[in-house]
Image (cartoon, rainbow, N blue to C red; front, side, top):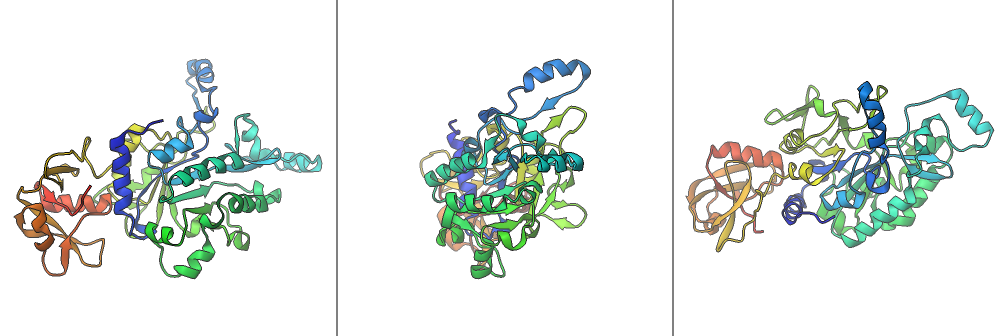
Amino acid sequence: MEVDPWLANAMATQRKLQDTVPLNFVSLPASHNAAITKATGVGLEEDWLNAQLNPLDIWVYIANHQFSLTDQMNMGVRHVELDIHWFNGYIRLCHAGGIHLELLDELMKELGIDWDSETIGCFNPNARTLNDTFVEIRTWLNKNPDEFVIFYFDDQDDLDSWGKLPLLMEAIRDHFGDLVFTPEDKSKFFTTFWPSIKQFRQIGKQVLFASRQNYAALMNNSVFWSDAVWQEWSPDDVQPYPQCSVGKNNLLGNGTMQRILGDSLIYGPFYHGYGGGLITTSSFPQMIDCDTNFMSTDQVNPILMESAVWTWATGEPSKISNGCASIGPDDRWKMQDCSTSLTYVCQENGSFLNFVLSAKKGSWVSGLASCPPGYSFGVPSNGLLNSRIVAMAKGQSLWINYTP
Protein backbone atom coordinates (compact mmCIF):
# COMPACT_ATOMS: atom_id res chain seq x y z
CA MET A 1 0.00 0.00 0.00
CA GLU A 2 1.02 3.63 -0.47
CA VAL A 3 1.31 5.51 2.81
CA ASP A 4 -0.09 9.04 2.83
CA PRO A 5 2.90 11.42 2.44
CA TRP A 6 1.74 13.57 5.36
CA LEU A 7 1.55 10.54 7.70
CA ALA A 8 4.90 9.17 6.50
CA ASN A 9 6.58 12.55 7.06
CA ALA A 10 4.99 13.10 10.48
CA MET A 11 6.14 9.67 11.67
CA ALA A 12 9.61 10.25 10.23
CA THR A 13 9.76 13.62 12.02
CA GLN A 14 8.91 11.96 15.34
CA ARG A 15 11.58 9.32 14.87
CA LYS A 16 14.13 11.98 13.88
CA LEU A 17 13.39 13.96 17.05
CA GLN A 18 14.06 10.84 19.15
CA ASP A 19 17.23 9.89 17.30
CA THR A 20 19.60 10.94 20.09
CA VAL A 21 17.30 10.01 23.00
CA PRO A 22 18.10 6.83 25.00
CA LEU A 23 15.91 3.86 24.01
CA ASN A 24 14.17 3.80 27.39
CA PHE A 25 12.77 7.30 26.74
CA VAL A 26 11.57 6.82 23.17
CA SER A 27 7.95 6.27 22.18
CA LEU A 28 7.36 3.80 19.35
CA PRO A 29 4.11 2.62 17.78
CA ALA A 30 4.01 -1.16 18.13
CA SER A 31 2.08 -4.04 16.63
CA HIS A 32 0.64 -7.09 18.42
CA ASN A 33 0.88 -10.42 16.54
CA ALA A 34 2.01 -8.40 13.55
CA ALA A 35 2.32 -11.25 11.05
CA ILE A 36 -1.09 -12.81 11.77
CA THR A 37 -2.92 -10.84 9.15
CA LYS A 38 -5.53 -11.19 6.44
CA ALA A 39 -2.89 -9.98 3.98
CA THR A 40 -1.33 -13.47 4.25
CA GLY A 41 -4.64 -15.33 4.36
CA VAL A 42 -5.23 -15.66 8.09
CA GLY A 43 -8.81 -14.99 9.18
CA LEU A 44 -10.42 -15.00 5.74
CA GLU A 45 -13.07 -17.32 7.16
CA GLU A 46 -14.22 -14.72 9.72
CA ASP A 47 -17.06 -13.31 7.60
CA TRP A 48 -18.59 -16.74 6.98
CA LEU A 49 -18.21 -17.80 10.61
CA ASN A 50 -19.78 -14.61 11.91
CA ALA A 51 -22.70 -14.91 9.50
CA GLN A 52 -23.46 -18.31 11.04
CA LEU A 53 -22.82 -17.34 14.65
CA ASN A 54 -24.22 -13.80 14.86
CA PRO A 55 -27.83 -14.97 15.44
CA LEU A 56 -26.47 -16.51 18.66
CA ASP A 57 -24.69 -13.25 19.52
CA ILE A 58 -21.35 -14.99 19.13
CA TRP A 59 -18.43 -13.39 17.28
CA VAL A 60 -15.12 -14.64 15.97
CA TYR A 61 -12.16 -12.42 15.02
CA ILE A 62 -9.04 -14.43 14.20
CA ALA A 63 -6.79 -12.01 12.31
CA ASN A 64 -4.96 -9.40 14.37
CA HIS A 65 -4.45 -7.22 11.31
CA GLN A 66 -5.68 -6.51 7.82
CA PHE A 67 -2.45 -5.03 6.45
CA SER A 68 0.83 -6.87 5.91
CA LEU A 69 3.81 -6.63 8.23
CA THR A 70 5.61 -4.58 5.58
CA ASP A 71 2.68 -2.17 5.38
CA GLN A 72 2.64 -1.83 9.16
CA MET A 73 6.33 -0.91 9.27
CA ASN A 74 5.83 1.51 6.40
CA MET A 75 3.07 3.17 8.45
CA GLY A 76 5.50 3.70 11.34
CA VAL A 77 5.45 0.56 13.52
CA ARG A 78 8.88 0.03 15.09
CA HIS A 79 8.12 -2.59 17.79
CA VAL A 80 6.81 -5.83 16.31
CA GLU A 81 5.39 -8.82 18.18
CA LEU A 82 5.74 -12.22 16.48
CA ASP A 83 3.70 -15.11 17.93
CA ILE A 84 6.02 -18.06 17.23
CA HIS A 85 5.58 -21.80 17.84
CA TRP A 86 7.04 -25.13 16.74
CA PHE A 87 4.52 -27.02 14.62
CA ASN A 88 4.73 -29.72 11.98
CA GLY A 89 8.39 -29.37 11.15
CA TYR A 90 8.78 -25.58 11.27
CA ILE A 91 8.77 -22.58 13.56
CA ARG A 92 5.54 -20.89 12.55
CA LEU A 93 3.60 -17.72 13.34
CA CYS A 94 0.19 -18.69 14.66
CA HIS A 95 -2.25 -18.37 17.54
CA ALA A 96 -1.28 -20.89 20.19
CA GLY A 97 -0.57 -21.29 23.88
CA GLY A 98 -2.75 -21.44 26.96
CA ILE A 99 -3.92 -25.03 26.41
CA HIS A 100 -1.96 -27.74 28.24
CA LEU A 101 -3.44 -31.25 27.97
CA GLU A 102 -0.74 -33.42 29.49
CA LEU A 103 -2.13 -36.80 28.39
CA LEU A 104 -2.44 -35.63 24.78
CA ASP A 105 1.03 -34.09 24.88
CA GLU A 106 2.59 -37.30 26.18
CA LEU A 107 0.79 -39.34 23.51
CA MET A 108 1.96 -37.05 20.72
CA LYS A 109 5.57 -37.37 21.81
CA GLU A 110 5.32 -41.15 22.07
CA LEU A 111 3.97 -41.24 18.52
CA GLY A 112 6.73 -38.92 17.30
CA ILE A 113 4.27 -36.22 16.22
CA ASP A 114 5.86 -32.82 16.65
CA TRP A 115 2.91 -30.80 17.86
CA ASP A 116 0.98 -30.78 21.10
CA SER A 117 -2.07 -29.25 22.77
CA GLU A 118 -0.33 -25.90 23.09
CA THR A 119 0.03 -25.57 19.32
CA ILE A 120 -3.42 -26.73 18.20
CA GLY A 121 -4.07 -23.17 16.94
CA CYS A 122 -1.32 -23.62 14.35
CA PHE A 123 -3.45 -25.91 12.17
CA ASN A 124 -4.42 -22.87 10.09
CA PRO A 125 -3.07 -23.66 6.59
CA ASN A 126 -2.06 -20.02 6.13
CA ALA A 127 0.21 -19.91 9.19
CA ARG A 128 3.51 -18.54 7.89
CA THR A 129 6.91 -19.95 8.69
CA LEU A 130 9.35 -17.82 10.65
CA ASN A 131 11.77 -18.10 7.75
CA ASP A 132 9.30 -16.46 5.33
CA THR A 133 8.62 -13.71 7.85
CA PHE A 134 12.33 -13.11 8.42
CA VAL A 135 12.83 -12.79 4.65
CA GLU A 136 10.12 -10.11 4.56
CA ILE A 137 11.69 -8.26 7.50
CA ARG A 138 15.22 -8.38 6.10
CA THR A 139 13.97 -7.13 2.72
CA TRP A 140 12.37 -4.15 4.47
CA LEU A 141 15.50 -3.44 6.53
CA ASN A 142 17.64 -3.49 3.39
CA LYS A 143 15.38 -0.81 1.89
CA ASN A 144 15.42 1.22 5.13
CA PRO A 145 19.03 1.06 6.37
CA ASP A 146 18.66 3.95 8.84
CA GLU A 147 15.74 2.39 10.72
CA PHE A 148 15.87 0.42 13.99
CA VAL A 149 13.13 -2.09 14.91
CA ILE A 150 12.46 -4.16 18.05
CA PHE A 151 11.07 -7.66 17.50
CA TYR A 152 9.37 -9.43 20.40
CA PHE A 153 8.77 -13.18 20.35
CA ASP A 154 5.56 -14.17 22.11
CA ASP A 155 6.78 -17.75 22.43
CA GLN A 156 5.42 -20.41 24.74
CA ASP A 157 7.18 -23.50 26.12
CA ASP A 158 6.92 -25.51 22.91
CA LEU A 159 10.19 -24.32 21.29
CA ASP A 160 12.17 -25.38 24.32
CA SER A 161 10.22 -28.56 25.06
CA TRP A 162 10.68 -29.78 21.48
CA GLY A 163 14.38 -28.85 21.56
CA LYS A 164 14.00 -26.35 18.73
CA LEU A 165 15.43 -23.26 20.40
CA PRO A 166 18.76 -23.63 18.51
CA LEU A 167 16.79 -23.32 15.26
CA LEU A 168 15.46 -19.93 16.38
CA MET A 169 18.93 -18.66 17.23
CA GLU A 170 20.29 -20.03 13.95
CA ALA A 171 17.54 -18.29 11.97
CA ILE A 172 18.34 -14.98 13.65
CA ARG A 173 22.03 -15.32 12.80
CA ASP A 174 21.37 -16.46 9.22
CA HIS A 175 18.95 -13.67 8.34
CA PHE A 176 20.32 -10.73 10.35
CA GLY A 177 23.91 -11.51 11.33
CA ASP A 178 25.73 -8.49 12.74
CA LEU A 179 22.64 -6.27 12.45
CA VAL A 180 21.39 -7.68 15.78
CA PHE A 181 21.96 -5.75 19.01
CA THR A 182 22.49 -8.49 21.59
CA PRO A 183 22.65 -8.72 25.40
CA GLU A 184 26.39 -9.17 24.97
CA ASP A 185 26.55 -5.86 23.03
CA LYS A 186 24.62 -4.16 25.83
CA SER A 187 27.09 -5.45 28.45
CA LYS A 188 30.11 -4.54 26.34
CA PHE A 189 29.21 -1.08 25.02
CA PHE A 190 26.37 0.31 27.18
CA THR A 191 26.71 -1.30 30.58
CA THR A 192 24.75 1.22 32.65
CA PHE A 193 22.39 2.82 30.13
CA TRP A 194 20.43 2.19 26.94
CA PRO A 195 21.83 3.64 23.72
CA SER A 196 19.94 5.93 21.38
CA ILE A 197 18.79 4.96 17.90
CA LYS A 198 21.71 6.97 16.53
CA GLN A 199 24.13 4.99 18.68
CA PHE A 200 22.60 1.72 17.46
CA ARG A 201 23.28 2.85 13.90
CA GLN A 202 26.83 3.93 14.73
CA ILE A 203 27.72 0.36 15.75
CA GLY A 204 25.89 -1.10 12.75
CA LYS A 205 22.74 -2.38 14.50
CA GLN A 206 19.22 -2.35 13.06
CA VAL A 207 17.32 -4.87 15.18
CA LEU A 208 16.85 -5.97 18.78
CA PHE A 209 15.15 -9.27 19.60
CA ALA A 210 13.37 -9.99 22.88
CA SER A 211 11.61 -13.14 24.06
CA ARG A 212 8.74 -13.75 26.44
CA GLN A 213 10.66 -16.79 27.69
CA ASN A 214 13.90 -16.65 29.64
CA TYR A 215 16.28 -19.11 28.02
CA ALA A 216 19.22 -17.89 30.13
CA ALA A 217 22.67 -18.41 28.58
CA LEU A 218 21.20 -19.91 25.40
CA MET A 219 19.97 -16.48 24.32
CA ASN A 220 22.82 -14.17 25.37
CA ASN A 221 24.29 -13.89 21.89
CA SER A 222 20.97 -13.10 20.21
CA VAL A 223 17.91 -12.33 22.35
CA PHE A 224 16.94 -10.31 25.43
CA TRP A 225 14.43 -11.59 27.99
CA SER A 226 11.54 -9.13 27.71
CA ASP A 227 10.84 -9.02 31.46
CA ALA A 228 14.34 -7.61 31.95
CA VAL A 229 13.65 -4.84 29.41
CA TRP A 230 10.06 -3.63 29.87
CA GLN A 231 6.95 -3.99 32.02
CA GLU A 232 3.66 -4.95 30.39
CA TRP A 233 0.17 -3.51 30.97
CA SER A 234 -3.29 -3.43 29.45
CA PRO A 235 -4.87 -0.26 27.99
CA ASP A 236 -7.17 0.04 31.03
CA ASP A 237 -4.11 0.42 33.28
CA VAL A 238 -3.10 3.73 31.65
CA GLN A 239 -3.93 7.02 33.38
CA PRO A 240 -3.72 9.72 30.66
CA TYR A 241 -1.99 13.10 30.71
CA PRO A 242 -1.30 14.84 33.03
CA GLN A 243 -1.22 11.82 35.42
CA CYS A 244 0.70 9.68 32.90
CA SER A 245 0.96 6.49 34.91
CA VAL A 246 0.24 2.76 34.68
CA GLY A 247 -0.89 0.70 37.62
CA LYS A 248 -0.64 2.47 40.96
CA ASN A 249 2.79 4.04 41.15
CA ASN A 250 4.46 3.52 37.76
CA LEU A 251 5.05 6.75 35.87
CA LEU A 252 5.20 6.82 32.10
CA GLY A 253 8.01 8.69 30.38
CA ASN A 254 10.45 8.39 33.30
CA GLY A 255 12.92 5.95 31.74
CA THR A 256 11.37 2.67 32.93
CA MET A 257 10.24 0.96 29.74
CA GLN A 258 6.54 0.09 29.53
CA ARG A 259 4.60 -1.85 26.89
CA ILE A 260 0.83 -1.51 26.55
CA LEU A 261 -0.86 -4.48 24.87
CA GLY A 262 -4.12 -4.13 22.95
CA ASP A 263 -5.92 -7.20 21.61
CA SER A 264 -8.76 -7.50 19.08
CA LEU A 265 -9.06 -11.30 19.11
CA ILE A 266 -12.42 -12.89 19.89
CA TYR A 267 -13.01 -16.64 19.95
CA GLY A 268 -16.73 -16.71 20.64
CA PRO A 269 -17.44 -17.33 24.35
CA PHE A 270 -13.92 -18.71 24.99
CA TYR A 271 -11.73 -15.61 24.64
CA HIS A 272 -12.48 -11.91 24.34
CA GLY A 273 -9.18 -10.09 24.08
CA TYR A 274 -6.39 -9.49 26.53
CA GLY A 275 -6.96 -7.29 29.58
CA GLY A 276 -8.29 -3.91 28.56
CA GLY A 277 -8.99 -4.87 24.95
CA LEU A 278 -8.21 -2.63 22.00
CA ILE A 279 -6.03 0.43 21.64
CA THR A 280 -8.23 2.88 19.76
CA THR A 281 -8.00 6.27 18.07
CA SER A 282 -9.04 7.73 21.44
CA SER A 283 -6.58 5.89 23.68
CA PHE A 284 -3.61 5.89 21.28
CA PRO A 285 -3.04 9.68 21.46
CA GLN A 286 -3.43 9.57 25.26
CA MET A 287 -0.55 7.11 25.41
CA ILE A 288 1.50 9.17 22.95
CA ASP A 289 0.97 12.28 25.08
CA CYS A 290 2.48 10.39 28.03
CA ASP A 291 5.59 9.16 26.15
CA THR A 292 4.51 5.54 26.53
CA ASN A 293 7.39 3.48 25.17
CA PHE A 294 5.64 0.76 23.19
CA MET A 295 1.94 0.87 22.31
CA SER A 296 1.33 -2.63 20.94
CA THR A 297 -1.93 -2.52 19.06
CA ASP A 298 -4.00 -4.75 16.82
CA GLN A 299 -5.59 -3.62 13.55
CA VAL A 300 -2.84 -1.20 12.54
CA ASN A 301 -4.25 1.04 9.82
CA PRO A 302 -3.70 4.59 8.51
CA ILE A 303 -6.49 6.13 10.61
CA LEU A 304 -5.16 4.59 13.82
CA MET A 305 -1.60 5.63 13.00
CA GLU A 306 -2.72 9.19 12.28
CA SER A 307 -3.96 9.35 15.88
CA ALA A 308 -0.36 8.66 17.02
CA VAL A 309 0.92 11.87 15.41
CA TRP A 310 1.82 14.56 17.96
CA THR A 311 3.87 16.83 15.69
CA TRP A 312 2.57 18.16 12.37
CA ALA A 313 -1.06 19.17 11.96
CA THR A 314 -2.80 17.61 8.98
CA GLY A 315 -1.38 19.08 5.77
CA GLU A 316 1.70 20.48 7.50
CA PRO A 317 4.44 21.44 7.01
CA SER A 318 2.87 23.73 4.46
CA LYS A 319 5.18 25.23 1.86
CA ILE A 320 4.53 28.87 2.64
CA SER A 321 7.02 31.51 1.60
CA ASN A 322 9.53 32.26 4.39
CA GLY A 323 7.93 29.64 6.66
CA CYS A 324 9.20 28.47 10.06
CA ALA A 325 7.93 25.82 12.49
CA SER A 326 5.69 26.63 15.45
CA ILE A 327 3.54 24.84 18.04
CA GLY A 328 -0.07 25.98 18.16
CA PRO A 329 -2.50 26.00 21.10
CA ASP A 330 -3.98 22.71 19.78
CA ASP A 331 -0.66 20.88 20.45
CA ARG A 332 0.09 20.55 16.74
CA TRP A 333 2.86 22.03 14.65
CA LYS A 334 2.40 24.30 11.66
CA MET A 335 4.42 26.65 9.53
CA GLN A 336 4.14 30.42 10.03
CA ASP A 337 5.86 33.40 8.45
CA CYS A 338 9.31 33.52 10.07
CA SER A 339 8.95 37.25 10.77
CA THR A 340 5.92 36.73 13.05
CA SER A 341 6.58 37.70 16.67
CA LEU A 342 6.22 34.65 18.96
CA THR A 343 7.61 33.33 22.25
CA TYR A 344 10.42 30.76 21.99
CA VAL A 345 10.68 27.22 23.32
CA CYS A 346 13.94 27.02 25.29
CA GLN A 347 15.64 23.72 26.13
CA GLU A 348 18.10 23.21 28.98
CA ASN A 349 21.60 22.66 27.64
CA GLY A 350 22.60 19.01 27.84
CA SER A 351 19.07 17.83 28.61
CA PHE A 352 16.23 16.60 26.40
CA LEU A 353 13.72 16.73 29.29
CA ASN A 354 13.71 20.30 30.66
CA PHE A 355 12.12 23.31 28.96
CA VAL A 356 11.13 26.91 29.73
CA LEU A 357 9.62 29.65 27.60
CA SER A 358 11.53 32.78 26.67
CA ALA A 359 10.69 36.05 28.41
CA LYS A 360 10.48 37.93 25.12
CA LYS A 361 9.05 37.44 21.66
CA GLY A 362 10.52 37.89 18.24
CA SER A 363 11.03 36.40 14.79
CA TRP A 364 12.06 32.77 14.42
CA VAL A 365 15.71 33.54 13.70
CA SER A 366 15.98 35.64 16.87
CA GLY A 367 15.24 32.51 18.91
CA LEU A 368 18.83 31.40 18.39
CA ALA A 369 19.90 34.13 20.84
CA SER A 370 16.80 34.77 22.95
CA CYS A 371 16.74 32.05 25.61
CA PRO A 372 17.91 32.54 29.24
CA PRO A 373 21.41 31.47 30.39
CA GLY A 374 21.81 27.70 30.40
CA TYR A 375 19.12 27.24 27.75
CA SER A 376 19.05 27.22 23.95
CA PHE A 377 16.33 27.49 21.31
CA GLY A 378 14.85 23.98 21.39
CA VAL A 379 12.24 21.48 20.28
CA PRO A 380 10.43 18.68 22.18
CA SER A 381 11.40 15.09 21.35
CA ASN A 382 8.19 13.32 22.42
CA GLY A 383 4.47 13.82 22.95
CA LEU A 384 4.75 14.25 26.73
CA LEU A 385 7.22 17.13 26.42
CA ASN A 386 5.12 18.65 23.65
CA SER A 387 2.03 18.54 25.92
CA ARG A 388 3.93 20.11 28.83
CA ILE A 389 5.20 22.93 26.62
CA VAL A 390 1.70 23.65 25.29
CA ALA A 391 0.42 23.74 28.89
CA MET A 392 3.09 26.33 29.76
CA ALA A 393 2.13 28.40 26.70
CA LYS A 394 -1.43 28.96 27.99
CA GLY A 395 -2.98 29.43 24.57
CA GLN A 396 -0.19 31.19 22.69
CA SER A 397 1.72 29.88 19.70
CA LEU A 398 5.45 29.22 20.13
CA TRP A 399 8.51 29.06 17.90
CA ILE A 400 10.39 25.74 17.92
CA ASN A 401 13.89 25.08 16.66
CA TYR A 402 13.02 22.66 13.89
CA THR A 403 13.55 22.92 10.15
CA PRO A 404 11.48 20.52 8.03
